[in-house]
Length: 204
Ligand code: URA
Ligand code: SF4
Image (cartoon, rainbow, N blue to C red; front, side, top):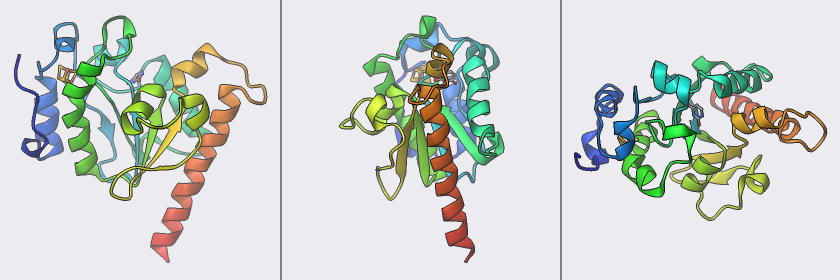
C-alpha cells in the first residue's frame, strides 16, 4: 500500500482527483469498482459531505446518484437548490463493502483528500449528511438527532450544518410533525435562508 497522502502535495482539484482515482492507501481500494472523488461547482459556497459511496456511486464513480442521491435531490429541490449550486463529496472516497460505516482508520487515511478539497473550494457552509460526517467535523457535538439543524463554527470561519442522511429519510418515510423528513424539510430551508442572506450581504 502507498503512504497516506500529504495535503500539501494535492494542489489542484484535477491532480487530487487523479490521485484519488488511483489511490490504494487503505483496504477499501481492494473492493471498490470506482473511487468517487466528488463533483459540483468549484466556486460553490455550499459543500455537502456524505459518508461514503454506495453501490450506484461505486459503479458510476459519481457521488449521490443512487436512491439516497435522488432523495437528496428532492430535499434540495424543495428550496430551489440545484446540483450546480453545490459541491458534493464524501468522507471516504471508496465504497465500504455492504455499505458498512467506514472504519476510523479508513476515514483517517482518506481525510487528507477531503481536507484538500475543502482548502481548494473554500466553502462558507458545509452540510454534513448524517452522523459519520458530523462526527468527523464536530467530534464533540451531540448525535445527529440533537445536532441537526444547527450551525456550528468549524475552522477559519467555515460553518458546519448537520442534517439527516437521505438514506435515513428513505428508511423513515413518515412526514408527520417531528419525523426526520419533516425536520429535514425545515433544516434545508435554513440552509437556503442562510445562503440568500450571504448573497444579499455580498451584493450590497
Ligand atoms: N451515501 C453517501 O453517504 N454518499 C453517497 O455518495 C451515496 C450514498
Ligand atoms: Fe484511498 Fe480513500 Fe479510497 Fe482508502 S477510501 S483507497 S484512502 S481514496
